[in-house]
Length: 293
Ligand code: AMP
Ligand code: ZN
Ligand code: FE
Ligand code: FE
Image (cartoon, rainbow, N blue to C red; front, side, top):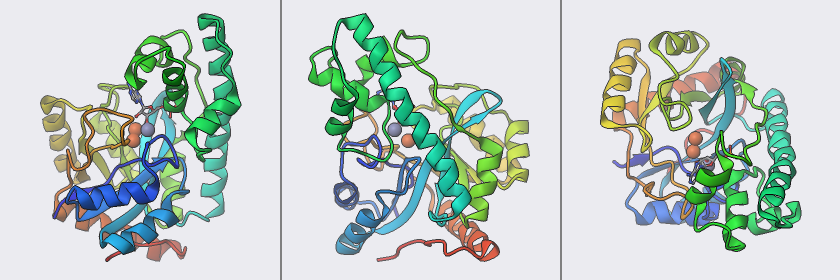
């Protein structure tokens, strides 16, 4: 069983349509795929149809932008009812912040580079996704010949500390863990020691979040060194958190994140699915459940 629980489509900043992502996952020999676009369930229906066609198991999820102790944390939310009103309201707020940031970043870039980048071009080039992000602005810079790839755009302009960086709002992490649980889903912290926060979350933080309902942490991720993976694994074992591994695939948008480059152990996946079933039952919400071929 090969299980990859964290990937992106064109519903956010991946470069494959949801259907192409599912077909690519089947082609890469995966048995289970999690689709986890940023802050939206927009790709779910298209992905579900494609999963039925190619016979792959699909876990519908999302990667929610949150904040914890003033730092940015990505929260993977699996199998929540996407129509649960408090979840919809919280995601709408994050999406509004994403959209509001685009013109602010473009104004900075135009001042810096003497360009005339317009918001409408970003949306058009990205295919009008629910969640716009800096990678889409990077794509516009590539199309203008200003940078060679997304990485260069982030390094020169878009990441924190660079001249076109603009902050945006995010949901409170603890609150969001509760909202996802109330929507019948389960939560996993994505890349807890990833590039934006290499040693942020410590064992006592994770223990506190577990009390709020956190189910697991993503350990095998390309942002984590072998040492970081070993240390995170020890913490997860100690706290009895679910341990996942995933590609964080973005199509052509992120190098070295091929589908299945990291995977989740079947026993850990089974635990996650059981916790989701229990959360769905307790919530009384019509949570989607795993889609089996
Ligand atoms: P945003 O959603 O606007 O906060 O942008 C964050 C997204 O940009 C995340 O999905 C990252 O995967 C992606 N990202 C961050 N740094 C890079 C990079 N150097 N190259 C490609 N994508 C990146
Ligand atoms: Zn992304
Ligand atoms: Fe992330
Ligand atoms: Fe991601």
